[in-house]
Amino acid sequence: MEISPEMTDTLIQKAIELAYEVVPRIIYALVFYFVGKFIVKRVLKSFNKILAKRDSNPSLNIFLSGLAKVLLIACLFLGVLAILGIPVSSFMAVLGAAGLAIGLALQGSLSNFAGGVLILLFKPFKVNDVVTAQGHTGTVKRIDILYTHINTFDNKEIIIPNGNLANSDVVNMSTQPTRRADLTVGVAYGTNIKKAREIILGIFEKDERVHKDPQPVVFLNNFGDSSLDLVIRAWTNAETLWPVYFDTMEAINTEFENNNIEIPFPQRVVHQVKEEA
Image (cartoon, rainbow, N blue to C red; front, side):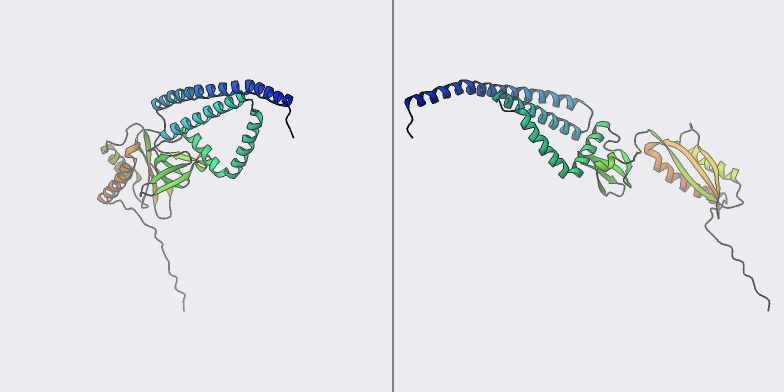
């Protein structure tokens, strides 16, 4: 098939018209891209400085910085496509479908991700807090975007998915400056409860770690099978709770021995009945 001079002129004319239409768009898109890239870098730099000044978790800073970067680059990319004349709505529809498919495939991980974001934003606990969660008690050592790492008191590392933490009860034992030590001690039936109470309160009176307001209290709580059960409550600083607890238990045992107050143990009375011949 031979190309006539008229057809050649037409093709050249259309090519020129297309060039007049496309080349400016390409130039504008390149200018928009490089200027936008410079602006994105400056914005991210300023944003990271603001995050560094905040008293927040490093994992949260990394996540927020990464999220801001993705959003800004996505906006820049969509702007370039719009300048080039590419339908952005179709591109967004493809991205939405792809995001839905990925979300269905990664439901568990996305749940942990969302839980990590909530924990890092609302801070129900932070690093070095002592917490009880998912049946484990220990010190929070690291909070990642997907998992929280807890060291138990016997030095085992527990890794808990953030999705579970965000949707369950967490007991934080480090938020309050003071805590109450609750002890239960049994004494034998026939013991003078008033004397036992005075001995226990005398132990607290000598311990400077125990707060005088609220005052320590000792109550008769229960008539047990083998003992009269005393409930003992005393307030102290959070960091001295367990030393006060263990020292008080030992001191009570010593003082009860010195004052002949019996701490009973479970026992049974057996009556033997002899049948007549």
